[in-house]
View 1 (tube, rainbow, N blue to C red):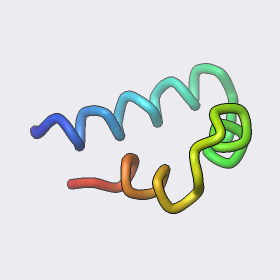
View 2: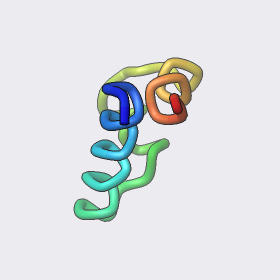
View 3: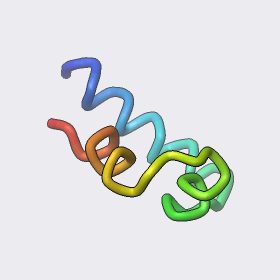
Length: 43
C-alpha cells in the first residue's frame, strides 16, 4: 500500500467514526471537492 492510498483509507475511516460525510468535511476544512476527490481516490 502506498501513502496516498493509506491517507484515503484513513480519511474514510475517520469519516465513518465521526458519522460525517465527505461533503461536510470539505465544507468544514475549506478543501475544494476536486482536491478532496484527488486525495481520497488515489490508488
